[in-house]
Length: 284
Image (cartoon, rainbow, N blue to C red; front, side):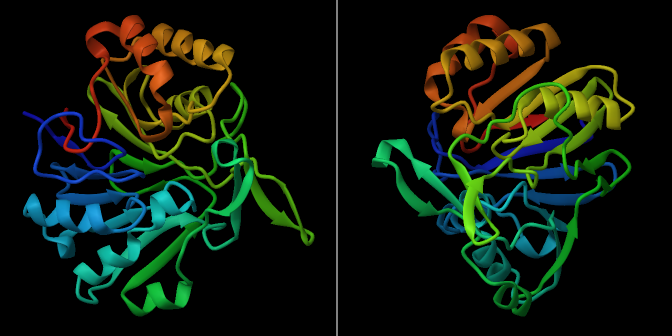
């Protein structure tokens, strides 16, 4: 009998027929059936898809115990206000990195290098007025016996995926190494299940830190963005090789992973590769 259910609520695409909506961004609903806890991991970019999909699935927003934000970019935080409104003012703990409210920018090559503000689109005050109770962290945080928020992920095993990201420092813009990028680690009977937002911390770092932080010995699965869109071909090949060596039973690479690497992942991982997107559900 399954003790955990993960369902993608928001993603860039809905690859299979569904009554749910897609939008750029990511969000997943994690239900720990043993403890009875429900976690909303990220919120998409606008709240339109999140609100529609929760209602279409008959999910009562007020029964969510925690919101976990993987990092401060709008495509993961932009639906937070709409979600809080759905709760009608009922308070909820929002777990995020302590840099959540710091400005964030990017230069998008596809837009001619235009500088864009990609940070959280709301103030702390307006979110707290709607019931958000922020728990801002840097270190790992255990939510249930089997579910842990990573906190800052060490960069000891591989490169980061933070190209084009910028932050304010000493009155100027500098490259952002995305120290606020966090993952959700779930200990299952078959090994570690890691859920990422964009994976800016780097795939190897996310997985290896999860294995070292938890009591798991192997990677059972990985769900979420791997931020390989626009990555050098060599980096894509390195990630495919690494994940192939880890031999997960489940890989649903979504959002910012990018289409160019998906075929290579499917070929290398075989039946472990799953078509992600809105309404993808797994139980373990």
